[in-house]
Length: 242
Image 1 (cartoon, rainbow, N blue to C red):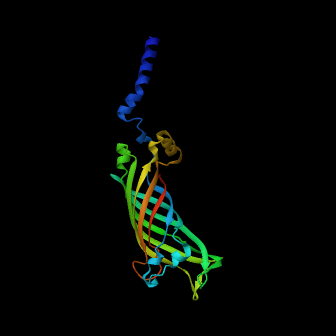
Image 2 (tube, rainbow, N blue to C red):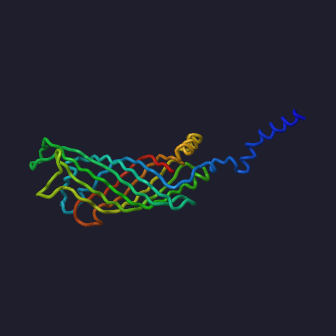
Image 3 (spheres, one colour):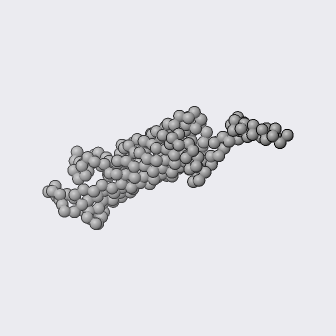
C-alpha cells in the first residue's frame, strides 16, 4: 500500500503544473502587482525656434551665437493612470533642463573672452494614452502612444558667471505654450520574462520599456510677440510602470 500511495502522490505532483495552468492558479498575471503609474526619463536635442520671431526681421541671433547644434535636454516625467482596459490612459507632469554654451559676442560680432549660455526648464502637464493591450494580451512588444498638454518654460541667459542684462532689463522670463507627442515603446519584458517578474516582486516595477518619441511644441505665449521657445524634436529614453 505504501508503494502504491507513493506512486499516486508522485503522479499528482507531476500533474500539478499542467492542472494549475489550466485553471490559472500559477498564471504570471496573478503575481503581478497592481499598476498605478509610471516614471519616464528621456534625453534628446532641443533647438528652440528663437530665430523665427517676426520682430527679428530675418536676423538669426541664436544661430549666430550658438550655431546649428541643439541644446541637450533631459526630462523626468511622473504619470498617474486613471484608466486601464483597452490600453492605458492618465495624466503626467514633467520637468526638464537644457543648456547651451557659446562665446559671447561683442557689438562688432567678434567673439568675446566670456561665454554666454541659454538655459531652459520646460515644465509640462499632459494627458496621454498608450495602446499596451496588444503587448499584454497578444504578446506584441510594441506600444504606440500619444500625449497632448500644456507647457511652461522658464528661461534665462548668462554671461560669464552672471545673468545677462540687456538695456537694464534682465535676460530671463517664462513662456507658455502647448505640445503634442507621438511615440513607440518597446516592452523589455519579452527579452527576460523571469527577470521582469523578479523586478516586479522585488521593487514593484511591473514593466519596463525603451522608447522613441517626436514632439511638436509651440511655446510662444500662444502666438504673442517675444521670445520663441517652440521646437520640433526627437527624444529617447526609459519608461517604467509601477
